[in-house]
Image 1 (cartoon, rainbow, N blue to C red):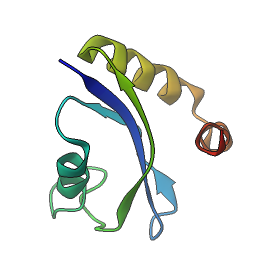
Image 2: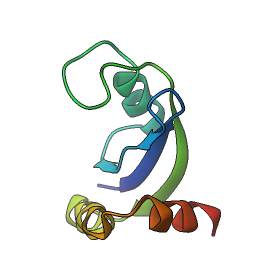
Image 3: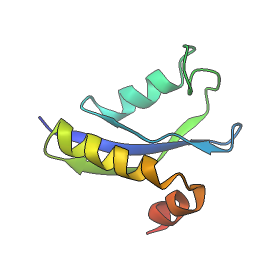
Image 4: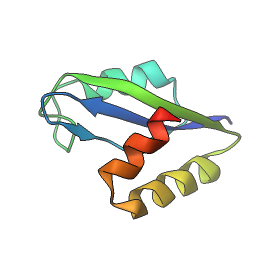
Length: 82
């Protein structure tokens, strides 16, 4: 099953979200923009700014963990620009 590593950005929060999914990416972004508990639930302006596709869930999740380990907004911005 193909999966994706993705990064949406919220202008109102001035923050990125780093995640992975094996569902349709637009549906996943729609869920981020719905009113729910959790990091992305309080705002409804999440826009997809970066995506990488992977052949399976474990690869996409490994990429998510690697990028989260950076703990750096500047590194994420650099990734998005390239």
